[in-house]
Image (cartoon, rainbow, N blue to C red; front, top):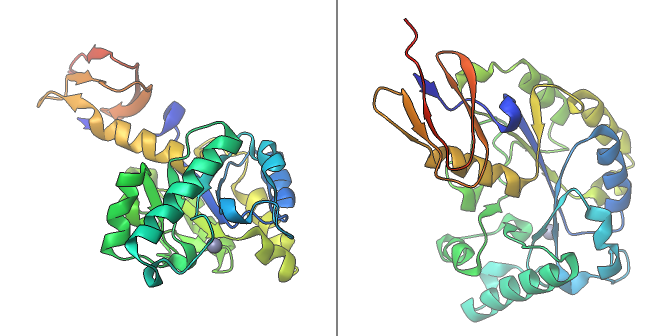
Length: 267
Ligand SMILES: [Zn+2]
């Protein structure tokens, strides 16, 4: 039987970090993450770039190796403004961030975690492939809906205890992800950068974990979902442009973009 239980390079677990607002404290956060080889997604408000306490357009290089994602242009309460203004907030943020980053920006997080069905329905129209909420679920399940991606926890919410639990999680139970969110300025204001250090020491540099951005995660999981298999599971076709991994009869299999794989039946 074919089992979709593996991530990039056959890894069995995934860690994503989702940090909002783009304040100057992102510098220290990125430095720490880089040391431990952990990737993150940073959700920025283009309208705040360069304001006091925030990073500016010239700091885009800081995020190299990580992901820059959108968070609206001016961080309004989106449910309190007209739909046209909502669209403008999404559009302007994406446009400006793409300009300074020189890359496609297709991720989003809801300011104040506020969203409704109408706002969610705009995500796809503006070209976002996922949108994160602030509704922590304290588990490691994959999002059922990438446009309402509920994280595992805020770093304030016993992230060390949850990380220990994740390390013990048996990947054969099903694909899982640890998604932590917050703001780097929380560490500064609350004087607890050691929480980030401790988290990274525990979760970083592990063989079984795929350290990816949210965008990379979504693309990979959608890629797995696009794999076509014969009913008997002896034929697998990869119609995507990505290299993907899965298990068959307990063995790790890699399939190249566009490859059609015939697998021998095990007797
Ligand atoms: Zn925010």
